[in-house]
Length: 315
Ligand code: GAL
Image (cartoon, rainbow, N blue to C red; front, side, top):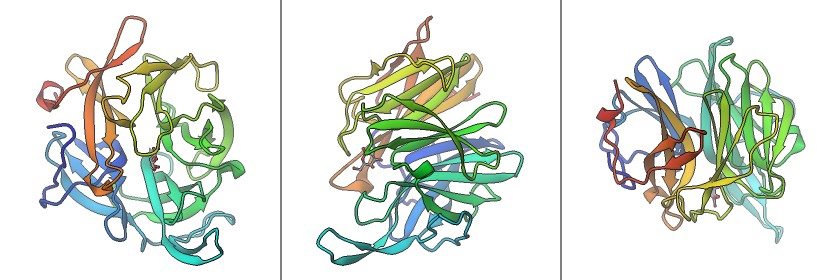
């Protein structure tokens, strides 16, 4: 599979799963991501070999079923937005970086995402949607500001014991905040850490390897790529290392989306999945898949490559 090219699904249509995330279930990789075609917002595809992608569903659209969940959540997927000059414009929501977690207690799939009003980036909210089926029609539970904070680029992380976290950029993207979720994953339980205050890190990606946490992120330059950095910690809420660079000055023309751990015959291999955005023509944005390598003290490097030979990895 080539990096940086438009991918197509089994219907021959362009695969839109930008700013995405993957879940593995019953032999399939499920790929969720942004799709801004018409009123679609989040699409889901699946594959057994990471190369052939079967379209499953537009799991969230502007016409998704909505359900009031918390009194202060806003369940509108379209709303009138007042501009600075006082004029009004109808906006259809802009949904970015959708991530899905499976909650084994409630048997629900819970999607966390970044919500904006579709006219500008001033709402800075997170939003939640829920489904009983991984690729079912998600019910939209609304958007809100976590603990009153602004919330833009985001990701999720689930511990082996099921405890889940939501991580998002706050205070005009200056800070990256880690929140622990409630047991049902539907709300924020507690803000547990503010990372790199004032350093404006975006596109967070969190994973755990050999009992250590790794957070990858980008700097804040809109659609333009920049130098990716990462940090390591023994505890999510404890002290994190300083930020160290990975990849080159543009992270090989990409911004982090998620990390895909692959069980291979030789142990777990870690694949970095990034967006290669096309800021002028968003639907022409593509993806890159790069292997991550770790040295003996756990420092990581990104391998720039033109294509992935998945056969090398899949058992
Ligand atoms: C990027 C962010 C993207 C999108 C874009 C809009 O920095 O990571 O998800 O929000 O800005 O300009």
